[in-house]
Length: 226
Image (tube, rainbow, N blue to C red; front, side, top):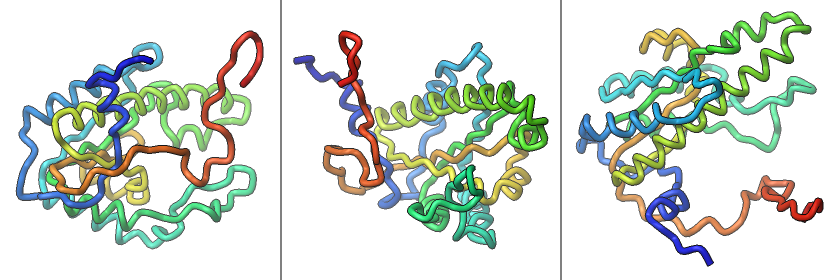
């Protein structure tokens, strides 16, 4: 059996930590710079590097972002929607309030922006002619894959530096306000909240989430799916 090492242990220990932070203990700037450097090292389609990272260490600004999220009238309904009907999925609940609360606890956050190097961003996609949309969506997916890799790189790097982390995509409920606060030019993807937390370690993840309807892994051997 393959032996574990520090990298594997860090990856498997990744968890979303949303409490126990000490905002009075700032994250050193050189630590944040190293975390961001790892994000910039992520792979991306065509090496297009579609991301832009906004490193926020101002407690007042983090509180302003949280307030903007909490002030949105549609926050209770900010959940994934079914593209076939346009209706929100009933089995997902809004976590905007929870995500805003985390921003009020942490001393630092990295707001992630998609520059839309292939797609031109969500507004361009919404306005695209049907004939152009299929190819444009593929480009958008490639942007998201690269940005996801960058987020995970930063997350694992932060864990290896004794930080606790959580990611919130639902900061997007206040995209307009956040864009004004930070000067975003592209799409707001989400925010990676970082800090030092005394939250107890969670047990190992033993099974897929309860909402998982299909097996998450399939092995294909000798032209057979198992």
